[in-house]
Structure formats: structure tokens, C-alpha cells
Length: 356
Image 1: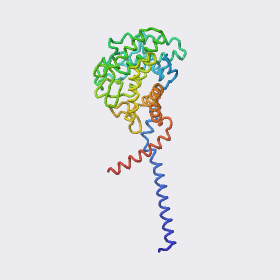
Image 2: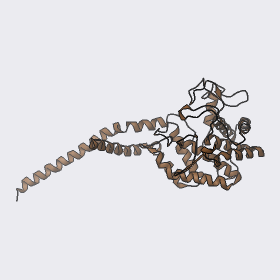
Image 3: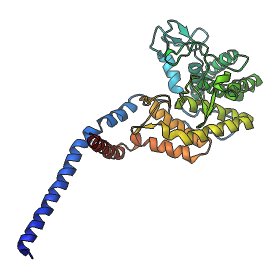
């Protein structure tokens, strides 16, 4: 047996060294963690920099659509302030247009173009302003609704008049987002005026949802499920915000028609999202589309969260809502999220060193 005093001293030294190692490791981690998570903090800051169309769930369960599910008054403000074309941002008839000589957009055209998406969003923004007491806004809303109705093609499509070279789309392409948002405008115009032509327009604008992209429609069905495509391209991009805007249109149409075909498509779309939302998660954040690893930008990230919360409420699916709440953690519980990200970043560095 060794000297008890010596053994005790040795044990004490080992314990002290281990304590110093633990304390040093914790101190080193606390020192390094903020540097490791700098990119994560930058993303949170960027997501809070600009306003976006926020959640607007009011009176969404009856058969008379009113408030849109995200607040489009911001888009009406953008039109007036010249975000898309120099103020007043509308033509002599009151229709918004995009002036490609004024702003950098997705197309290389050098002339003004009417965009059904911008017109629909402006209409929904003006309608929200009407619901908040601006009586004159209903006139603007109905001007947009009439323009959209009059520009429906015989097959129910609303062609978009500018090119998107990055997606190989020439003028005349169609979008599930444009179709869905126009439906949301039409059903509100129908509720306001009782004009059956607007209900007919909504039903007509739904027709492209019954056709695949290959058949000149806006729906994509693959092994993963049913998708509503903002961009009709191959391979499909599955843009998340565009899909949800399109789904809002289906819900609005279902509210006024109770149509089984519409309900089935909406249910299939919601189920597909539930099964595939994990695919949008990348590096602790969320991507814009499945066609690339492009992270959702500073306005799209919080918008996607509120869109999901709205959709979860509309289709009464807590699975969608729970995913939205998880995605919202960086914005609503930043400190807790950054602590988790610190451990993730530490693991990444360890794995990288082991890999070397």
C-alpha cells in the first residue's frame, strides 16, 4: 500500500486539475460561443430589420371572407410610396404597375408591366384598409377586382407579363400564387357586391389548380405529395410562401362554395406541407424554396412563420402550428435559441477537426 498522505495529495491534485480543466473549458466555450454564433445573430437581426405582412387572423371561420390572413396594408403602402413604380404607383385607372426602369426586379424588361400578384395584394391591402374604417378604399378594391376579372383568360389563367430569366420563364407564365390571391380578391368582391360574376371568376381562377404544370396548370404531384407552384418550372422549386398564398385562395373559395374538390386539394396540400416542412430547414434557419439552398430573406422568414400559423389555424392542424412555433424561436426566444446554436456550432467544429 502506498503512503495514504501521498495518495490523498495526488487525488487532490487530480481533482484540482480536473476542476481547472472544466472551468477552463466552460470559460473557453463562453468566450468562443458569441463568435461561433455571429452568423446566427446576424440572421436574427436581418429578419427584424424590415416590416412584413404580419399574421391577421380575424373572423376566418364563417362563410363570408373578410380580413385576409396576413395583413396586406403594407403592400398598399408600398404601392403608394413607389416601391414598384414612382408615386402614386398606379396608372390613370388606379391599377398598380411595375416600372422596370424604376426599380430592380426579377426581369430584364425596360418597360412598365402589370402584375396580377401585385394587383391582388394591393387589392387585399386596400380591402383591409376599408375594414379598418377607410370607406373610400372599397372603390380601389373593386377597381382591382374588376381588372383581375377582366384579364382572366378563357382557361382561368392570369398570365404574368414579364420574364424571369433566372427560372427560364417568358412573359405569359402563370403562378399558383397569382391564381390563389386573385381568388381571395374575387370572393371578397362577391361578398361585398353579391355579383355572381365575381364568384364565377373565382371558380374560373381555380381551374388551373385542377391541371398539372405540364398540362398548363399550377399543381405538381410527385412522390412527396401535392404542391401548388409559384413558378411553373422543372425541376419544381416548391417556393414555400407562394404555396401558402395559393392555399389561402383555396380556403377562401371553400368558404363560399363548400366544394369537395377544393377541399380535397387544400387537404392534400396541407398534408404535403406537414410531411415536408423539415426539408425547408437548413443550418438552423429556413430556406426559401426546395429548388435551392437559398435561405429565406429578412422579410420572407418571419412571413413564412406567420403564413404557417395562419394555415394551421385555417385547416385546424396543430402539426403545422407547432412547426411554425419552432421556426419562430430565433425571433421570439433569441437567447435560448443562440445557446442551442452554440452547442451546434461547437459540435460542427469538433467534427471538422476530427475529419481533418
